[in-house]
Image (cartoon, rainbow, N blue to C red; front, side):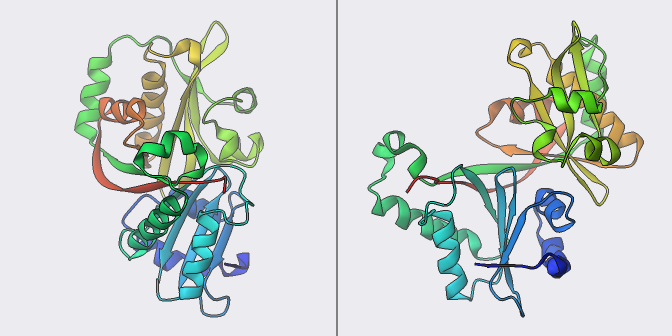
Length: 282
């Protein structure tokens, strides 16, 4: 794959705008709010792209007519050269033919390694897994009802500060999505729930672009099951509504905690698509 010069990132935007899925993580890379990678099929006349976010999320979209690019994508997602040391989660724009291409690559890779269904647990990180990603949309009426029914919260959420940003160092936390605390406090938003001076849960903007704010959440292990994530998320959604921002929620269908919390807050599933966990051991 050919790495696209950052000065040409604007070429990708029209195609990304046509994608009818949540692409905020890819947009933040194109807007250079965070340092990612953009690969293409042709440096002079690009028609297909592979966008990689540093947190380990990626998106492939565009034309599928370049066989050389498809081979390069195949080598990358199967990690043939062993350059990737961690897992990566890949989405393929369902508007094109990339889902079929990735499914074919996955079937060939898994079959060649003898990784049939009975051996996947044993194969572990060598197998490419096909999960489901769910995009949600906030139903404001349902949110209002959820807020009214929530009653007394475990504690009152407070705005996330740079100190909170730094203190959050486990799980899905803001440092994976923002350059540093100063960047987050200048351009991001979030709320934390404190118990005895410690962070119990956080809801924060993992991405913020074009009037949309994607919600990231994390609850500390000792505080799970107490409604802390609900309370923090409630505060962040209210923040979005007050400022005319669209609250965005997306998660794996298999992540039952996030899926159920989204619905409890008033989000409704609007689209599903394949979500590939890429192998990182050859």
